Amino acid sequence: MATLLAKNAEVLVTMDGARRELKGAGIFAVDGIIKTVGSDKDLPATADTVLDLSGQIVLPGFINTHHHLNQTLTRNLPAGQNCNLFSWLKAHYRIWARVGPEASRASTLVGLAELALSGCTTVFDHSYLFQNGNSVDVQIEAARDLGVRFHASRGSMSLGESQGGLPPDDCVEDEGFILRDSARVIRTYHDSSVGSMTQIVLAPCSPFSVTTSLLKDSAALARQHKIRLHTHLCETLDEERYTLAQMKLRPVEWMETLGWLGDDVWFAHAIHVNDEEIKKFAGTGCGVAHCPCSNMRLASGIAPVRKYLAAGVNVGLGVDGSASNDASNLLLEARQAMLLARLQLGLDGGDKWMTAREALELATLGGARVLGRSDIGSLEPGKCADFFSLDLHTIGYAGALHDPVAAVLFCAPQPAVNTVINGKLVVREAEIVTMDMGPVVETHNRCARKLAEKV
Ligand SMILES: [Zn+2]
Image 1 (cartoon, rainbow, N blue to C red):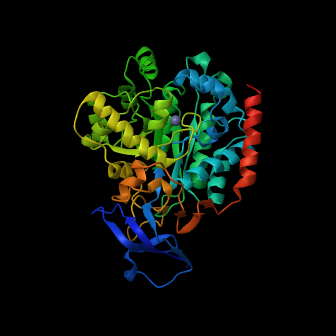
Image 2 (cartoon, rainbow, N blue to C red):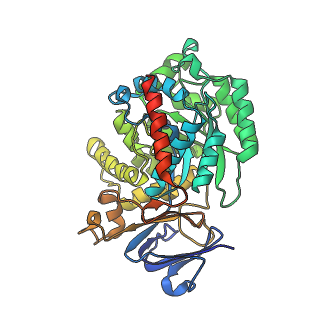
Image 3 (tube, rainbow, N blue to C red):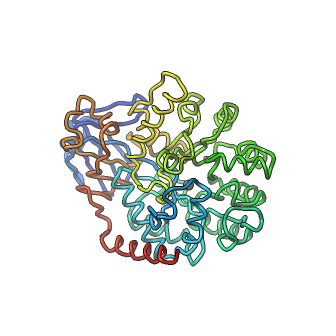
């Protein structure tokens, strides 16, 4: 039995049903599950691990609902700096296809570590390029070694250029192999129990890179194993033009004909939707991964987050791949979500401001709902001991402590002092403690240089 006591927090944001924000409070956890959340006087005197959080604010661990961790290898690539989605993808496909196991492990570790340093404790990664020996297995092992709660995807691309798709033919896989490998990965790794550290998602890449039959077969396989489905949808108007031309349907209509609307599905971006489609998402339980930084960088558009929330659609946040962000910082993403919703208010009219607390809810409870988990997203007895703390007495928050909770998003993002996942410290004193990251960064940079050299 491993016990953890985190005490003396200046403020503790629970995100529980009453949205309590406690002062002078802490958490006691046993074997990764929270037993007590409350005032310091209600907590045990000691534990195997004791954290003194004096002067710090504690929040539930953030949940990242869309990423491509391998893309940290191609951050800021000159050929992809100033273009929108389709040209940006074409500039990257062949480089990503050369990512092998060593580069995949290094980039997975770098992305997950950066996320943990920004308070993120659960990560979904949308991997869909498995050439050159790369595999989901490498990523899952890396996440386990670092100690991050990980939802991996056995993603896919099967529709090459010669068949009318966007990716080059040498970047796509055989559909029979994709489905067999998907079944293998589900059987080997998927754990649906409370407190699960590893889950599998099936995630064909996008309407313009997979066939209709692969979308249908992936949905059938996912439902057979009761796992979730994910893809990019309604990211750009290019995509809408593509499905209108190829399928004579808007993207959401097309997905509906394939059985791809349901409470076991969530879509990345979902920017270009009409009011009817928002109602369909709400009615069927489809979730949305909102990725504001990537959407701004690629000039894709602004997702109607306010309308989604008003309609009752589940919305979480995603940093998206590090070739279109180019940060894996969820605190930054939550801030951007708050700011972008305000810009949209000015553009579209309306009077409902996105508050800091609402944006924090997207990053926590919202993400948990999107991933279909009721054991993470808030700090309550029976939930996973996933949380992080920030030092409120740094330069960055000076003068903003009238409302420390809102300061976390109104002020510039600060590094997490502690990040606890599954009751274990992954970040302490703003450093990763489960692994020596120095050599990982060196390997990562060597692999990134090699990939870029061949462009
Ligand atoms: Zn993406």
